Image (cartoon, rainbow, N blue to C red):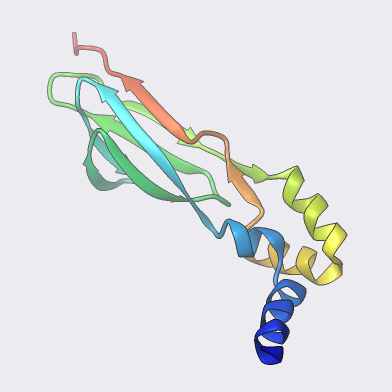
Length: 121
């Protein structure tokens, strides 16, 4: 019992809030009218509707493609979540360093993306 409590305490002492609770990726829902192929940073990931894990700490290029329709391009941006910083500061300097180094305190600007493609002219 004592070892278990020590282990749990160590995890919270030496880790950081965003690293423990969030991690580096977020799940994003993608949908399109009409159904489209989804490309993430140029790589085909599947057809809509689809849920994908997206890295939070970088800008990600999203493309929706369907035959006979104009490709729609957008981007998902990550930014530092203020709540994670506050929680890290409350827990001490080490959590701030860990979350800053790993980028785990970044959050995406959207949790779902809906594209409406226009017919090619």
